[in-house]
Image 1 (spheres, rainbow, N blue to C red):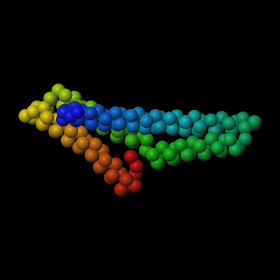
Image 2: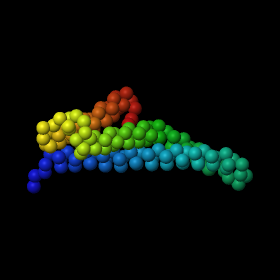
Image 3: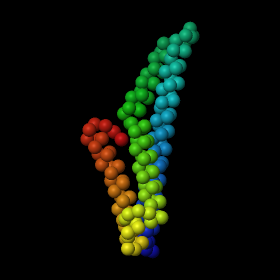
Length: 145
């Protein structure tokens, strides 16, 4: 069973959109979850210091856990990944709409639907390649994305 270039291009774009959307959602959850935990942990430590029944060990453990979460957030760059992946997903969605409506070049100037689909697929792959290029730049500079 052969699929048309349009079906192939849309399938690839939809797969990319799904991956970037899911990844952005996960990065957002990691960012907000870690930040909320840090806030709760750091607010709890001084409250425990007021209690005559709590040990210094518990206070130290909570402070250490907050420090670990802050360090992990910096290491894994959840906020930056969330923003980058959400942006790339939105760019892909915008390009899909342009393709499906035939708005703008190269779609409006294409001689056939297959030619437009090939141009669309190239654009989708270019968007993904740009994301990979940014990731490689960050890796070579010592950062993570």
